[in-house]
Length: 290
Image 1 (cartoon, rainbow, N blue to C red):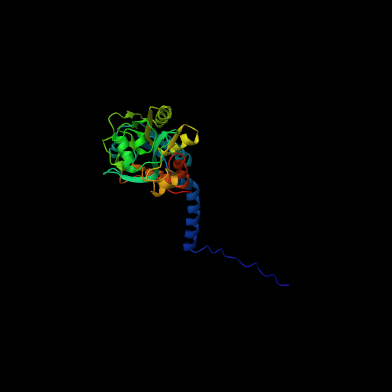
Image 2 (image 1 turned 135 degrees about the horizontal axis):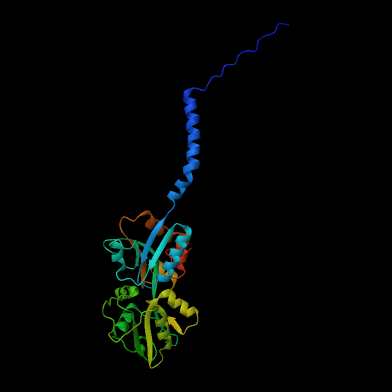
């Protein structure tokens, strides 16, 4: 039997174009393994955010800031409160965001909620309701007896808030009594102290004050001897504040520079998210009812 030599098999390398493709693919895999994680980290939010204010929103803003930090571990939000002219701090670059109720001509603003303003009296005051005009006359001192608005035979004790208190501007503006509240009014800053004063004022006087609505509703539900008066036949409640039927309210705004960085944009988006609105709704009135 004739022996046939084993055929010689020539190795034919892949065409250069295929070699390059394979090489490029391997290089891409190595590159992704080496740098991919770094790129992901680079895309994550990181840095410091300064939020300032001087109103009653401190607690809810701190809760919002902590939740944002938890969602973005490489971010720290510094909440500075009781600051003079928070909006000016944003304008000058000393802060990124300011909490306010009024737009600023040089800043952008984003509304994140509502704060209703309730008219609070002692539980024993049987005045059924007030019109906007009656409320104006009470707070300016034109009406000094509760009997004139269907209430008890007691003197009216007006409680006002400091001139820089955020709800004072909205309250005066709505009633059309800016800088015209009675000079004999008792000025009290905190909602808690307002509630205690109204509850503790007994005949021959009966007090009336204006207060952040959620603080008033909380006092009523806790059994404190106070009640909230309807205004223009509308009950002060979250749904009526949200849809505008109860007009005595102020917007909760976050003021920022017109060209906010990505960190500011992310915080604004978080405040408007379901999680952020839930936090805001715990003390104020969220923009949407969940």
